[in-house]
Amino acid sequence: MDKFKEKIASIRSEAEESTARAEAAEAELTVAKAELSAKEQESISFNNRIRLLESQLEKAESGGSASQDT
Image (cartoon, rainbow, N blue to C red):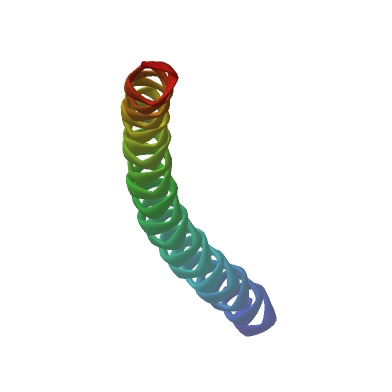
């Protein structure tokens, strides 16, 4: 009977350790997802800024070439 109780205690301990590891992994995953989301937003922001600057460059180049033609 004692061996049975020891085995139950051992299994319970393993289950608790596994649960703790799983919870830690889930927390790390949540942090990683948040970081990924922030990086994606930053990338979108940079791409929008690039498009804006390219548009401004095109306007400046076309305005500059028109004034050089006259």
